[in-house]
Image (tube, rainbow, N blue to C red; front, side):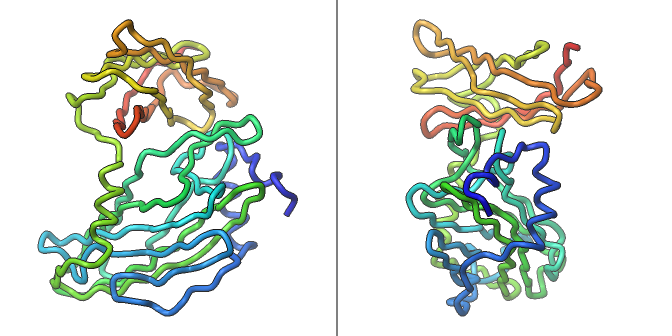
Length: 290
């Protein structure tokens, strides 16, 4: 692959690229033997270590199981968030080959913004755990997790990975596993969906070429930023931020580019607002000016 050519992939092409690279590219590492029932074992490359981990050595009493995708990345390397932004490949998982699993819900800790060749991207660097809640079909039976992950790890070049991580968990034996605290640590970084906290979005409005957020805070804002997710024919740029005199409020003007052929009258937007170690997520259906 040509350095950096693979980085400049627009979000609207991500799903097409995902299918193309999954069958063509194999990661540079190899999985070591499973080190414990609660870990898939590390898959190691020259620039990363990744694995799947569980919080307990058995199914929880409520019929669920907490697991997490754990990545350690060398300096300068990064993974992409669920929506990478203007460039990159979303980190995705397929659990359809798992046994005794009804569903898996992934929680996404707040990402950080990166500028890659002038493109805005949402990434994870250094170390990340993506916490996941597995709903068990029959709590009296063991669970086999087969998580097929497709993701990109990038620096000056991108490497595309198509890997399957396996966990075998006994039934109803919820002893705490060694990595439970690690999953909890990153779980605390997942944006809150509950209104009325110290950080909130008072209003979301749209125009022909922008989304405007009115953010409120119980304490002075340090450096607020926001990621906007919406239909694939909308691309969102870098916000212009205007703070209130006491920094307990801010208005974010986020450029919006329409790249489709027919613009809908309404759009379902997911807004993630971040300020220091605080983050919130809000979903709004908004009118779109044509």
